[in-house]
Amino acid sequence: MGALSDSRAPAVVRNPVGAHVPVAGGLAATGLAAAARVGAEAVQVFVANPRGWATPAGDPRQDERFRERCAADGIPAYVHAPYLINFGSHTAATVDHSVDSLRHSLRRGRDIGALGTVVHTGSATGGRGRETALAQVRERMLPLLDELTHEDDPWLLLEPTAGQGFSLCALVEDLSPYFDALDHHPRLGVCLDTCHVFAAGHDLAAAGGVKAVLDELVATVGPGRLRLIHANDSKDVVGAHKDRHENIGAGHIGAAAFAELFRHPAAAGVPLIVETPDGPDKTGMTRDVATLQALRDA
Image (cartoon, rainbow, N blue to C red; front, side, top):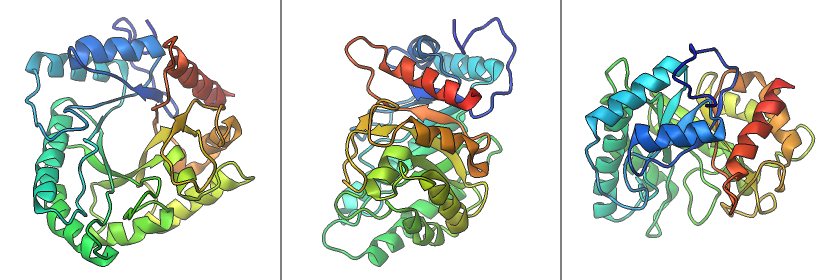
């Protein structure tokens, strides 16, 4: 059955490796089956259309089954908020929708027992400066963080982008003013996407490249803020500012960088989620999960 078997007791897994799984047809019915198929030890899901503003109510039966199965099997779960969210937008309607959409993803995260809700850090649109956009991030996002008062609320995990356009946060150093804008809230963390950070200009493939990035991350936001890693190789070269994921070891980052990642103390215990191409044979993600597990256990 793989990692999501009803018959086994939960086990402590160093750096659980899992995948973003589809949930059309039901969080538990579809999502857990997909996770088992790829051998996932952790899962990430959407709880709304990732390219829309709808905020659908969940199915309580599916929520309960998903939450109970993940808890029973020791599977950490995460929600990825919709891609349209941008708290730096100059368009009032976009910002209003962003507030509603992120609040929905955070609350649905609590419903299903998610440990974190991932959101892209957005961009400064309309020709406005970074400081103006970050002031708006503070005004509209900080109240959502302050709503996280339940013990089982998820962390809000900021995911820096690949540096396209007028990105507010791509390089690790960009997290400093973003965290400052949000008062280094105690429920604020980071989801580091390896493809994004490579595309933004951090050369993970260079000797010591992963150590340099993670050392800088800890120096920038403090220890314990790295809560999730999106483990994706890159189709493009370092600094290309293109968000194109490749299978582990088949891109410009290479498998050795992921092996180095597992050895860094900042990544100790942090789950990895694969968002790589599954390919026409539907086995790409399964291979990537297995590859990362093998690198971890070597």
